[in-house]
Image 1 (tube, protein in one colour):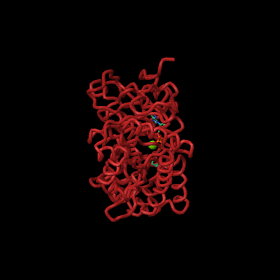
Image 2 (cartoon, protein in one colour):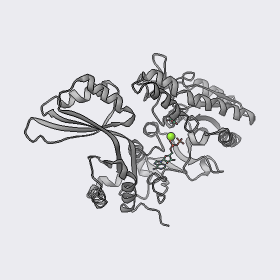
Image 3 (cartoon, protein in one colour):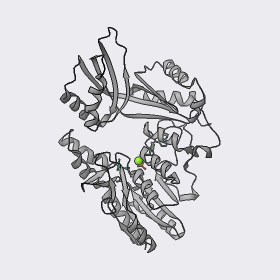
Image 4 (cartoon, helix red, strand yellow):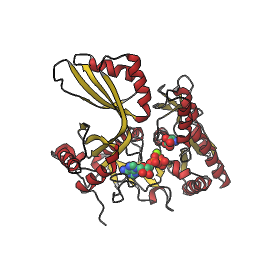
Length: 410
Ligand code: ADP
Ligand code: ASP
Ligand code: MG
């Protein structure tokens, strides 16, 4: 007997037929003698629709109410999944985030899980009941509904697996594993059999939306055995060759660059003519952090006259309005503030970079050969990211994929 958490993403529960198909898979896991908790996303497209409703009322909405609205999608799927399991003769019950509870921070819209009480779920598992849990939802200390940020059902699943001390966390999705880059952009992308937590975290945080970054962070910290697999195949769980997320030393073949990520969820803000003096950066970034806006890439130009300089940084595209509002309210002294959301961040990721120089150079050469201008660069030990015009995003990803030898043999 094993404890298994199985998560089904939006496309895998897009309609009643797919929910029934997912329920068949759960039934087979139960018939193998396993105890199962199912985590479900909202049906494909539902969360986007709910976000759209909120934005239509106000782009500067109260995030507590945004959470109340967007958390609703998962509630529907959880109830339907419980019904589909019951129809198959399996004892099943749905549990909203607040009922378990999934305690989270107060950071509405992108809350972090702080604690899960698995007692009742474990007790019911002993009685052969399958728990159906809506992903993405939590409850704050102040007893308000929270959500975990887009893609957050992955994190709900891994956190639940950690709390239940599960033997496996299976992330069923619409691709059959993690690829060297988004297979929808590069058809020649290769499936990766095993990827390290570190690389997966970087790829996820840089835009590979196949897993939410936080889910990989929790899996690494709590040693959750996690795999990504297709919900469209007939085989289930351990029978499927998906992608395992593992500790670095378990990986045999190592590449210089393991994967390429592309994020279109970027917007760029430039301050022109800010005073080049101590404290200038904190005057800009403190109000942004107080408004709950996360800043990512930052460049400050050298001042030509020792007086004024330009500063460029990126924020999440969905946070641009909030960021500009916070900047305006802070009344920061400068000549002009410009913003643009037609940018994309392209990143190369690989543990092999630690011990090899020249990896970034190849990236810049490839982009230059294609006539693509780099607006901002940021690096870490295992990644290099560049910000470019969104129009060239796919061209850049394809060219880099080939240049680093990642294309699948055809
Ligand atoms: P779900 O609804 O199951 O959570 P998502 O849409 O969030 O699924 O994530 C799966 C999608 O992630 C795939 O359809 C694919 O287009 C995209 N993706 C981006 N980068 C990668 C990658 N490196 N490997 C696999 N899929 C990727
Ligand atoms: N439904 C949420 C979203 O679309 C959470 C998830 O699917 O993981 O972002
Ligand atoms: Mg997802």
